[in-house]
Image (cartoon, rainbow, N blue to C red; front, top):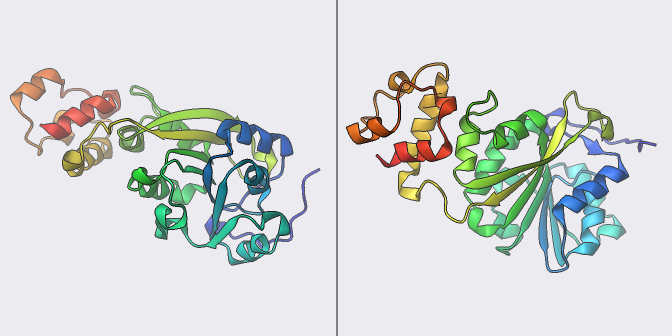
Amino acid sequence: MAKKYQHPFRKKWGQNFLSDPNLIRKIVNVIQPQPEDSILEIGPGDGVLTRELLPKVKYLSAVEIDPLLFESLSADPSLSSANIVHADIINVSVQDIVNDTKLKIVGNIPYNITSPLIFHLIDQRENWDTIFLMVQKEVADRLAARPGIKAYSRISVMVQSFLNVKKHFIISPKVFFPRPKVQSAIVELSKKPEPLVPEADFPRFQKIVKAAFSQRRKMLKNTLNGFGFSDILQDKIDFTRRPETLSVEEFAALSKD
């Protein structure tokens, strides 16, 4: 039976609490918490996943933006060994909360902050090891999309230039309260040994990808005509193609020219 909540849900924070113990166990199996692990949980809500992870790891810190939930979690005796932080994760540094480069980050992320949060964490990639996020299925599809399909988009290219993306499983709206209108999915983000785009090339890469997908039905020769690519590169990459057909590696090559 689903738990009855008295909490005043705030739409701007995209609050949807998990209510299925079997799903919680399934998520824990994906995360595979180890005794030596440090975990940073983003948006613990009422702490249902927090309570499962806490006894299995060395250290757990949870960042909660809702002041009422922060107070409730802080007062919970079962979470006394956890570090509960009242903050907006977008405005804080991971290292200031947990200083462990092997850190695992876990979170149930509302749609409106998914992209900003992922890029916020990419900027801090030296400070963590693996990320497990629950996001809308549509977002998960875009993060993991390969070239040539509709879901392949600007965020697919940007994220995959730094991270490996693995989509684990789909989650029904029925296991949340309040019930969302869409399906969710668990995605795992792990760092590539070396980013496909060096730091020095990143500003140009970012502009190229944005320009290409701003008019995704147009050919590259039309959307990227102001970037001045060499004849050698134009011999290697057919600029009559559309952006959704280019691999992340090909976009990276464009930024180096």
